[in-house]
Length: 325
Image (cartoon, rainbow, N blue to C red):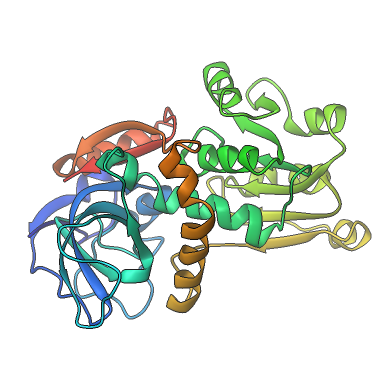
């Protein structure tokens, strides 16, 4: 099969197509003929050599954390799927390829009305948003959340999820156009960080944040903590601006704040299986019904994965970038 194989680390130009052996599904795995694969910031980090796949290291390093396609083979103990079914899946790598094998409970059926690109835009973004809002921050209807990088894949999914759950949203974006777009997703207040400080908006228009979902990191650390109401939770989802900070322990202690880091890829298999199954029960029906929507900015052929990575670096994305296979 054809796949994007990392034989060296560096810029988008290292993403080249190679011929590799088809993956062989284990006894509880399905083999998926990939039709589309989502592009994530984590893929850019892996391409640069800063986000290695979890152990045990694969024989061939292929990026890609989410995909959609048809089941073409199943392991001996698989009971949920049969060849020919349309599925989407969360994987720990390997989605930038014509085929990928994954545990059957990390996949779910894709309705006929959903395009391959839309289906591939769901797993990493919506699972990350759902996990951060509910399982890490423990938010409930009526509370407040600050979501950074809200026009991106994870951010736009989190805004939709929070609005659907009755949670009030303050969002940050990098342009007036993105602000209008995110406001259309249901955010209560949207801050163009190039024009205004989000902490000013939080203090002027809200009772304080019960949680912050941060994909930026270093430069937002102090203002994130000051945005939190007593007992609030800072959930660190990404570190686009750097991962080194100086912490005010007095602020954490005095206001009873919690800081939590979260990532899907590094979790043990059993924890990922449990999260996906909870997501399938609670959130997937709303995606099928169209109340929540995977938002695809643009698509690139697998052969142009380097162009897709370069486009993501330009920070002009609204929603998700998807590779078509």
